[in-house]
Image (cartoon, rainbow, N blue to C red; front, top):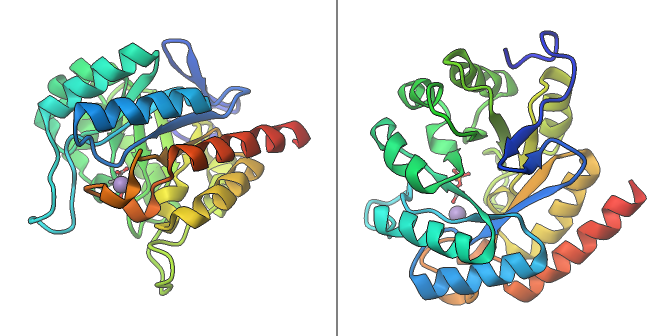
Length: 263
Ligand code: PEP
Ligand code: MN
């Protein structure tokens, strides 16, 4: 079902009027974690002003260490919905457990499956019956074929609204957090009709590299970007090193306009 052989034309995932996979580059932006209503509101105002269509933010955080901040759970989901509605943004947020589909679906417009859950087949099967789109991140060391199969799990259940998200893979390089594989954009476009967006924040782990990699991702033909933006990255509870300030997010958005013009 994910294959372009079955479905030669590009698929568009329509999130209440915001089309992912159409003409426009869709931008999802916001903090790594929802920390407080003040932090989230400041971030949402900034990303809206910069031109994003979606507010991102994690309420269930799959942290590497169990002692790190784990997220605000439903309280965080409520904040996301409230602040996104205030600003006229859609919500994308991570789901980590199949038993949370109803809960997360109550507040989110798009379910995010994180890299660590790309092969959580019970979760994928359950999302196959969900009524909202799923953004499927590439696994930490997943091949393109494994990633396509993960999407197939969702589509096989009847949910055709799947968006791929390249977020970097593990290599021998340590300067960057991950190695952003922009060739995945071309590979997915060749093999599948589904849209693909790129996450240069997790893909590099370094805020200095987010703008150049976002530009490259757009030039490579992605359908959108997901970018971490924090009003005060130096005090972020997660991923401050890769989060853009509102000012740097504005600069990135200005640049994207220029790239789109020459394409
Ligand atoms: C995130 O988007 O905050 C996240 C945890 O990303 P990933 O699953 O790609 O590591
Ligand atoms: Mn993050």
